[in-house]
Image (cartoon, rainbow, N blue to C red; front, top):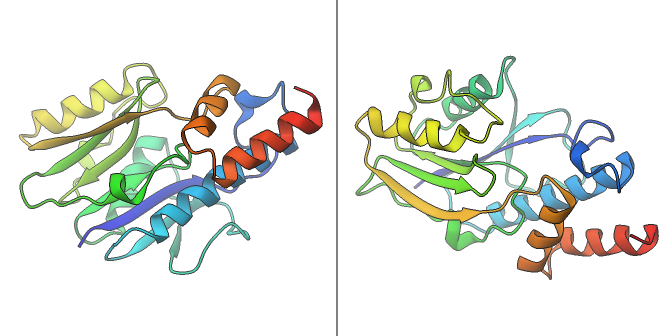
Length: 205
């Protein structure tokens, strides 16, 4: 069975979702990040898995449900931190971030019986999910992160290594206010949608 990895930052004002400010305040942006993370972790908790690991920059908070091992992120760039995250799995693993609270257990239930990797492209050019049957840091190290070509370069790295890659559906990350509203519409009953509606109403935005 697959290990599920979530890589995340502790949702503290000024450290997360800074592209939501303005129109939201740093405190509101952090609340939205916490809601997105909580929704994501609840979904992971509801998905069959060998283990569930939160690879965290910061300290756990009330948004963390039971059933997760928490390990710290290593130092270095995001490519190094992603590569290190897979080292904690000890076997086949699927890694996601905290930016897609619309994920479902169905999307996260993967089987490596007939493939070596899973790749979930994001609409902004990055990727929201990466699955590897075997840990190999070279598959991630050196991939340029947070660029419009990150996803393309990462997928090509998998293909160039001779891996059989299975595609996951393309999803939209929450980076901007437009992203937030679009994602909330896809998961209208989640905590993220509720918190976005509250912040929007209270702030009159």
